[in-house]
Image 1 (cartoon, rainbow, N blue to C red):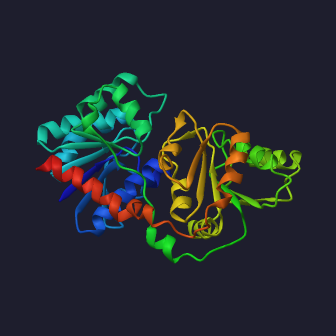
Image 2 (image 1 turned 30 degrees about the horizontal axis):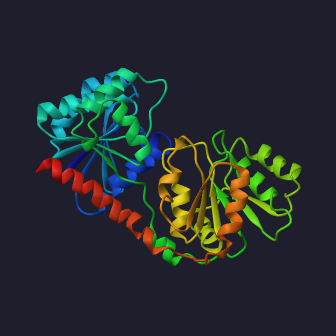
Image 3 (image 1 turned 180 degrees about the vertical axis):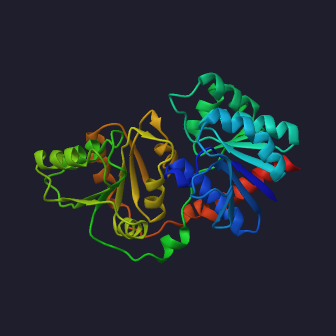
Amino acid sequence: MRVAFVSLFAPGHGDTPARNRTRRVARGLADRGHDVTWLCARWWGGDHDVFEEEGITYRSVTDDPSPTAFAARLPLALRRVSPDVIHAVNTPPTPGIGAIVAGALSRAPIVVDWWRDHPADSVRRYRVLARSADAVTTPSRTTKTRIREYGADGDDVRVVPESVDFGLVEDAPVDDRFDAVYSRRLDRHANAETFLLGLAELRGRDWTAAVIGDGPERARIESMANDLRIADRVTFLGDRPLRERVSIFKGTHVVAATATWETFATELLWALASGCVALVEYQADSSAHELVEGRERGRLVTSPAELADAFVAVGQLERRSIDRDFASYDHGAVLDQYLSTYQTLVD
């Protein structure tokens, strides 16, 4: 199958969760023998229009990342590629709309993968994009609701979650040092305060905890642990490579997810696959609760006090270093969901 990815920005312009998701899908397709072309603004050096990496052929539509110029030149670029299916992203929306127009001209179906909205972009363009795509994929039901508010038919919006390398989870050693862990970039959405306040309620109990991640809020969060008089029991590990994080998850009983905003709680998914019991604080702008609803090894909380109570309550659950229920989130299994969407549209 010939698949054309349409994204003004590529990971070469800088890593973001959305770009990494697109690259993972493109690379997975290439590894399975599909013909994969990524149409984007040029991010590589030199004056050549084509760059190949990891089985993906990157073709520059424009030298500069101008959404309008990119959309205008896209129909010709797609005609040269002649794809069976077009996979576009939603942000910025103008190139996605250009892909829809080009797809109509070439009769190639278009799938829009929708990560999140950018507040600087036009709501009207998002509405056009949501209503005009042949199918929309998105990582969570929370975001699906947003897309339906733009006017998309719910039957055309499919939840395709983020994924993990389950083989890595199986192979990683167990680092058995902590009873509880929080793992996320420490930015303004992190809300690690709930985690620390919940632990502070349990000063009289025996526990150790870790905070994995770095970011602009780290110093303030470390200061808070000191003010709560639990700094001697909370280890701030900073950024750690994925394999090391998985080893820590495999040796830890409880993971807490308290961020106020998550399109998809990927770190929580890794921890769940690694056997952790999850304590998730419900937040209106986070989809983290979707990973634990209805699961015995998960609890939803709404306050630090409830988190503390849940931490005590789940103490009776066995410690695990892997949870095979999450093998369905393996990279290969999730890639199959994209392929199924493509094939349905092509047929």
